[in-house]
Image 1 (tube, helix red, strand yellow):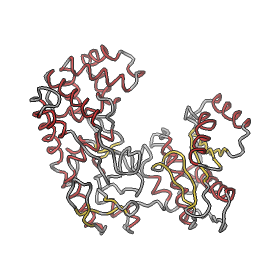
Image 2 (image 1 turned 90 degrees about the horizontal axis):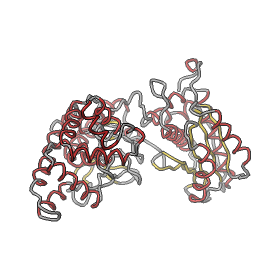
Image 3 (image 1 turned 90 degrees about the vertical axis):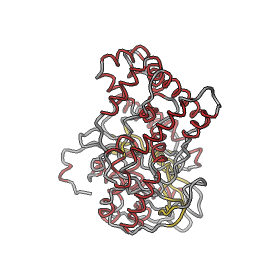
Image 4 (image 1 turned 45 degrees about the vertical axis):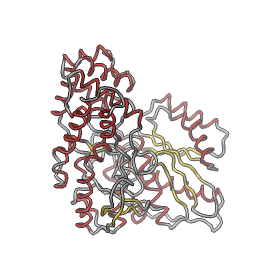
Length: 476
């Protein structure tokens, strides 16, 4: 399966699609960005002009019902529970979906615990609907994917209208489809890779993490307020940075319930917090530029690849090693290494390197019409190269940055386990040096590699540190 964006699949100029304001989804891969409810106030998408009000109304209705609850399971409890049921959001292609690109809902136990916490908060004297946007910072089991999906569910009619307009303006075909069993048929584009509906999202409502989920942002707010900081220290302690996420959430939850003013201060600061949409030009977390910079590489830097009619495991290994060599060349001698760092020169997350390699591998396999397909969990993590027919073997490539503290463990433990579980005959450990390792860590790693007797494993070393002469290299 080749990797394509929606615009590329339908032959639409990416610049024209970009003017629509919609995220151009990479088909089959979830872009790890999230809808931030705060950004609904500033979006320029006309279809979403009333979305912020719709979200507030929904949560005000929940609070009104919760106030009437007398015991767990009564008619008002069940009504509130139903209002908090946010089923899987299908077709958004964003977030941490884990298995495919169709999203996840919230389980019954997590929902019951959230409802219990909301009851306690209301009893303590708080009934601001914005507390629902902050549930990710004080309730266990709720992360940015849920916050995003929760908001998307509420504003889905607006997102559908937005999708329909963008498709009509760009010429993307649509057809009547159901988003779920509970939805009526609506006119939407179809994901040609999964045969399921696609829902487009405006780029100006997306962030790397919603403010309401980012623990760092909440504690930044706390540090600006001496009284609030003192209150939180009762439950979390001065060294909150060393606490686990669960411990931090527990401290916030206790503080919000036992001292209502704490929550009021956090909500007030949250509503004033200055936020901006994700910077797609700089792409600080490496979510989108990997695709735009790799799709045309075979035309700019040709790499002939071929396999015999009846390839062996070593034949497949040879092709994969050629792709790794090309990746090394593009990083070390071209400008592809720039995608490993943000505009301030700070190294991006390891997933940026994984996506970059995945894009390179996919581009060259498709360009050479190989029966070989690189597959991965949404483009992140180990990449399995396997044939779609005939020979059933695999070659697995694991990408690790030298800044990863588990560099040695990945080679000695993780890669062999992946090989065994995926039935991969050969494994390549592609180490990308981003200058983030101590000399001792590198020495220990090299010594371990030198002592290994596993001939099915091979280490590829790629120098990904920025070069002073990079400006003179040929632009990719």
